[in-house]
Length: 351
Image (cartoon, rainbow, N blue to C red; front, side, top):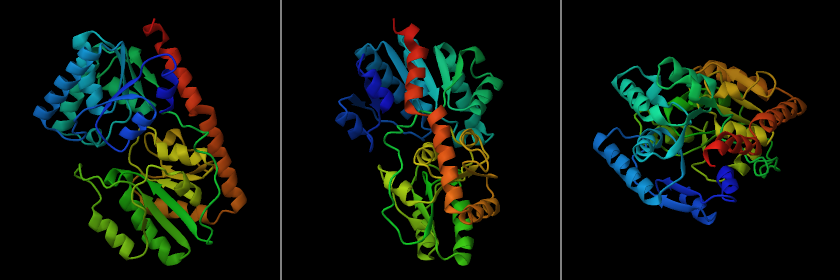
């Protein structure tokens, strides 16, 4: 949002996106918003061709001077629409998602679609070096037009240290993520179950949206069972995570693969220690033993050991980790830094 606010000073900014919980943010900020129907995770070819047709018509009618595309389907179909209309664009690959974690027909199809779509874009941006290597090594895109952006930026004036509202002496771990397998939800629940039996004063919270659009979603029945058995505190979904982070002692993300996870950057900006997987995206943020601990992906045993280790640190040691995380965000991921990169990278295209 900060990038859009900044560019509104000099340009008309238009957002094209599905109607969701973020839509009112655009309207409240005075950003012109065009809703578009899109199956974000579906594989229906007819529906996707309808999206391409919709974007083509919209771009043609609006006569855009420049377009940024984010997430898989807008990157693919929006880039093709820009190519057909000779509109300048940059595509931002915010993460490879679960499709790239499987070697199957869908994986090959998506790669080929990326190859076609990205052939004429000005630049392709990635949020980490590993994702760029995948695209370059698989000859999806020419390395010469790739760039690695340090995440999408964090508004450090918004995500800053806050007082806890809950002061009951409990030690709180918090996981913020969509409720799908690839976020390591089940590993977190397994570690929580075993730790809760040993340390009754530990609280293991999950904040995130149910996601029924993918095969590996965590069902409401699973969540209900974990809550009923007393080792998971499910907080549902919230657009305002600041107080949840403030009330926690550590933010955990045992994800299998990320772009650059915002939940960890937000926690670091608020001076919380983190525990995260030694996996793509997460490793960009964590220095083991400095601002938190790395864990092996898909290992609830390692997650348990690192949560227990952090629990036994003194308040001063955890505070030092929180400060170290804050310094990492301030030096690399502050929204102000990201905005300056945007301006520098596109200035020659907007003359």
